[in-house]
Image 1 (spheres, one colour):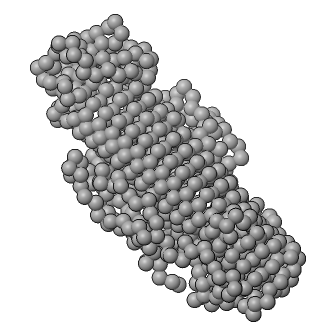
Image 2 (cartoon, rainbow, N blue to C red):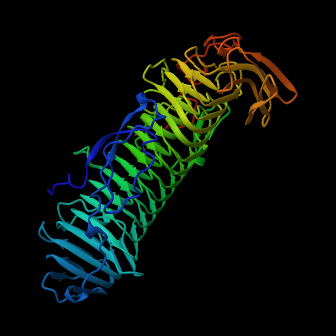
Image 3 (cartoon, rainbow, N blue to C red):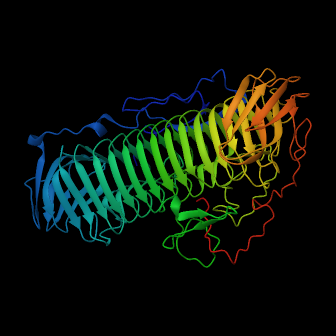
Length: 637
């Protein structure tokens, strides 16, 4: 086995949100530092360990090389049912062509029910040049790499090439050949032509080592994975249209946790799958590109009722981890981009419509830049550990919960989200967003957790939540940024909800919601905050003025409200202010730094009242009848 460590270094870097904002778009000579400099406006206790890829040797110079010498190449001409070739390194048996020596081989023509087999020494590097090739194999792969050190599949400029399987795979040796292109060793694909792959019974392209693509156009239709590399999938550039019955792009290595990664430097991707759009058993890192991804039929397959219960509309697929013990069908993960390790997004344009989470990590999830248009039947962004947003524009038009992680840290960017339940939710452990969403049969036991934290130090955040607007099972720390919350209209949730301590020392925070369950900031705050009982309707402006009539804040609420929480640097202890909504106004004198409290929390006067909520069930004491519901729950894989 070749040594792989020269291609990958899994570096644990101290990635601070502002420090990570500039990542290389990459190229074969790109490098990435293993450490980041802490920004002066970033609290020192907010650093998080993030696994990143060393891209300095991600692609070799030959991975990009598309040239060849025709005079020294072997010419293989395909004549439907026969093959012409004069090279001693090429053996023809019927419609089976076997290449056994290092070199360059130029293929053209059509081969019916045939196969190109590469079975050379494990030190041989072989280049296959496709010059208008059509190959179909009724019962196996069109191209099969049994052994080589590395194979380069190059498409001639403007050529149209097609490789397909006929609908079943029959074993021809000890290897489980299950793709239209199947390689036991490293495979690189490049060139400036178009390659169409059809695999109605298996995968599109499989490499059991590294799968590398540096250029070209690819149209792939497969019953299983579209592109699959066991040790890694690495794409420098290209145009990809993938329709897959399972994952669009997939890497999984269960024997080595440092492998099984996906690295995308650039490219254009249009992916429609019944499984995950992009999936890796370790790290997914995307440095740039344009992505349009739809999974599991999209978010329209999930609907929410008035009680925020969800219903699964499809009958042809079973979502992951159902509670139906009688179901024997295989569950399917339907996330947009999923990493079992870290998910690192440095730049790119993303349009994702998924039945399950759009962006999901079983470790940490970092967004350093990019434009995101997300619609999901579950979480917009989900991480089992920490979510870090440093920059970018994130728009979540539909979600059960907008952003959910054990910890959430936002230092920059523009976030605009709509959530059927919580907008921001710092919850412990695995995907908790259910309890009314995909895991709705589970009980979360949302008790106070000191290691759950939401930290906001920058950025602009707009939240429209039917549940809690900002919900931390532990602490909430705001030091900067602008946060605007249109919270729930029912009294079972609040615009601001925390179980630990909530402090604000900078930035703007304004929230409008029902008054039953919301909270104000706590006494550890160093910036003034007021909670005021005042009612308004959808699209009403909330205006804060000082005693001289100077306007300090003016914000339009997305929905009706009976309570407002306002904090900004202009609010000073001992001063008086006016809060106005339409023709209604209230005068507030800040005898203390914190005015008004909810649920008996915080410092100051004016308890907002409301019955304490039962934290163990997101349905607020409503009994769930497991037997009567027809919804199928989804969780994480």
